[in-house]
Image (cartoon, rainbow, N blue to C red; front, side):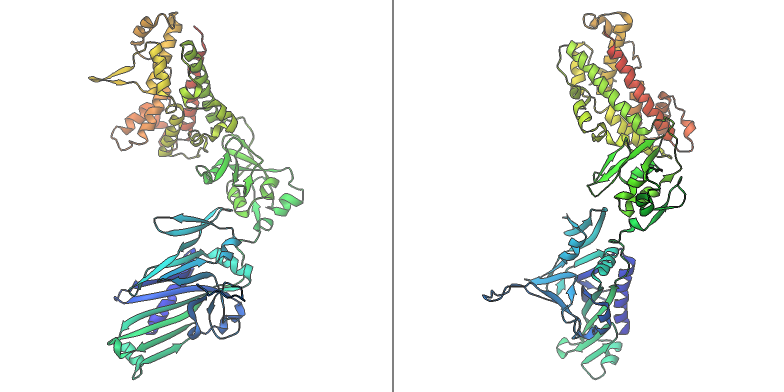
Length: 584
């Protein structure tokens, strides 16, 4: 029978040591491998460390002493109260719970102490499908600090699960802040068949009682239960005691970091108070931004490389330099940031970078966006000459005023093309980047506006596809309109009065003004059809239109290919703008 007792204790300790979040309170009935139904009730309390040795396992009461539905008293005001009894020793008669619990109409409720939640400013987040509430520390941010399944319902001797789990670092931190140990108390109850081991323990008695330092085992026999006995195990386990302070201790002022380009260890005092590094800079790879890109919780200025988080911290005073580096003012980095933030940026420390005037991926993206806006402006001018009233947004899907006011990189479709470019870019990542780029320069083209201009120019709006005719898509319409204008300029034919002759010549084939846009479209389609047998052929053909040899990327790194695609798309848009800017 001792094996049952110690296996249970061992199981609790293993769960405490192996999981980042410790179950500090739970109640449930489970069916064991031998078919026995066992009910477990667990809670946790805060007590003076010196009192731990005074806990009496046989006196532990896991039922919370709590005031529920009190009678009104004309003389005395109500003082809400909750406590657990750990022994008759002073200081343990009413022990402070870490998790509050109460019962009502067969419902058993578990709720973390509000003082604990408030200490760390935790914010609740409900997951409806699981009926669980998670509490997050958004100052870091760190998620799932506390997990709560709040209600257990008792029904026909069976209790479904309710539990509270808390991150072990926050438990340790709270223990140190409160100067108290956190102790888990538990009770295990079950009916079990009488076997030889139980018979030897009971002997001729109907009752067996054994107490150790941390556990009490009770076995009860009753003739009404026939061949079964009732087993109850109560006990405790120390989760943590005052000591380290992993959350609340301001490591920023103590911890030091090695930065390339600066001799010695840099800590808060050296960076901010000594004045030694007042105007010094450190450099990091722009891959540091991967942690934040695509997460709406962070505000990123991709042009500078700065990042801020909901008013909690900001890595500012930055400048992107060279192809893939960010320069930081070291004093500003240490002045107002958590140590976790500084450590993250320190991981990407690189040697100082000379400002060679190389374009990073953000500069290339910016040129593309504003060239696309220029394309919209020139098309607006054309639409006006055609008697149409079309805004830039109606043509290219982007509002120039919003881009200027809110920042060109804050548009949802544009953000992904500003993300840092990995030094080792896989083929799948390259294709994904091509897809995002096409969403900006291709999918933003508005069919309705282009079709209305084609109609005014009498350009046919159908393309033969075998035996049937389909309406042209945006990219094909853009190509036809630009070809139409190019023919007009080359031949001297009037853009408006000679439309029949121009359209007749248009049948001879494309002028290849936006060939690279068609190639980009081919690449983004490959992104979702990679399993096709013809993938390699189509991939090589698309790269060839950008002047790239697929064999040059046998190593699997498409970083340079991505740079070429960005450059060629900009040149393509500029070529289209130059054509539209020629007056006929």
